[in-house]
Structure formats: structure tokens, C-alpha cells
Length: 264
Image (cartoon, rainbow, N blue to C red; front, side, top):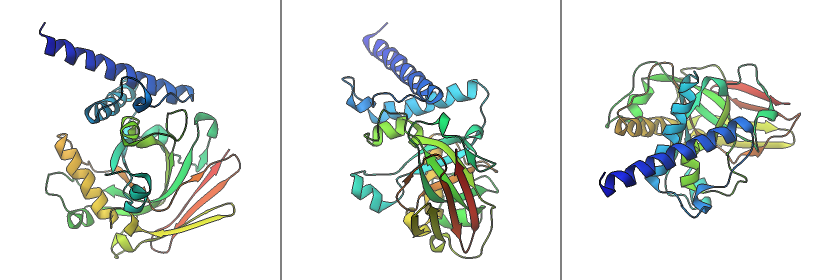
């Protein structure tokens, strides 16, 4: 076998091994050392391949993909953390908290963010999809996203986060609407104990519609599309909060209604 093929096989083995390690970390609720802090390091290509390999592991045990979540769509958050671009990960049926009660026992060190969610009513695909295309292709809701990095601590970078599926862990979504106003004007308030945080849809790439369009263009590069019924979480509108047992979190919007999460 040529040296180049041996190197490719070795890289493939490494990707699969790390994907399995991260999968076990999630299932066992035990964080592992960030890949960028290991001697082998992590490349951009490897990060995306590890995320894809993890998705294959989920699908192989019968999990159902329900959509996608975007990370770091807030320019202010990217600047604060030295991040150059957004990323995304997949959402799965087991992550959706339909009854609004989150069992913290299945997580490592979770935080919650208020977000604008989108559900596709038709197929969205192509390299040229714009925010205006998105506006006619689905509906909007408020959401609470729970992020839970599978690392030992919240000390990781864009590459680690991408390999980890953008830290997707759980989510709650309110009822979907077509409110008749542009999504960048949606007003969201998150209330959690003594903490109240407010923001608008503009925090997500200037508009949640542009965030969805960005995702669709990224999926096109992977020969994929956003299918009807799939949910997209468009990115945190405010900084996240730590989740602790007994905490109640509510996200509300005059345009979109509300959703709630209770931690136990």
C-alpha cells in the first residue's frame, strides 16, 4: 500500500477512535481531554470528520436526527472568545425535552441559552440560498438550547467544539408561528432564578433567517439539504447560564410566545 494510502487509513482510524471516545463520554457523562490539548492536535478537516463519525454512531443505534443547531452566530460572542466563524452540529430526537423537565443526571456541566428556532416547511437547499428564501420556507419559535461539552472543562476552542457537534445536548421549543415581522426584530427574554437576560434575533448573524441560510449553504457543500420538519436552532441570543437542580428557565417573546425548562 502506498504511503499516502496508509496515512489516510491511519487518519481514518484516528477519527473513528475519537468519535467513539466522545460518544462514550456523552453516554457515560464523563468529560475527556480536549483534542487540541493533546500531542496529536486537531485539524479542521478532522474536526468535521469526527462530528460526522459521531452522527454515524448515533444513527447506527437507531437515533433519529431532528435538525441542526448553530453555534457562535453572535459576532459579539465570537469577538469576546477569539472565534473567527460559526459552526453547527446535529440535533437528535433524544435531545428534545418535550415535557420541559431536564434530568441533569445525564449531563456533565450544562448551560442554557435563549434562541430563535426555525422549522422547515419545504426543502431548503443550494449554494445560493438567501435569508429571503428562508423567510418563505418555514416558521419560527422561541427555544432553550442546552449545551454540554463532552470535555473535562469549558476550556476548548472552535476545533474541539466542532468535533463535539457544537456541544448539542438538549433543547426545548415552543409553538411555531409565522408572526409577520422580520425575525431579526424578535425580542427574547430569558428568566432563570434571579437572572434576567434580554436580546433580539439580530444577535444571530444579524438575522435568524441569515443563520438558517448559512446552514443551508454549508449543507450544500456536504451534498445535503434542510428537509421539511427539521428544526434549526439559530444560535444563542445572550450569554449562557449554568443549570442546577431545581432551576426553572423561561424564554418568552411578544412575537413568538414562550417555552419553559425545569431542571431536576
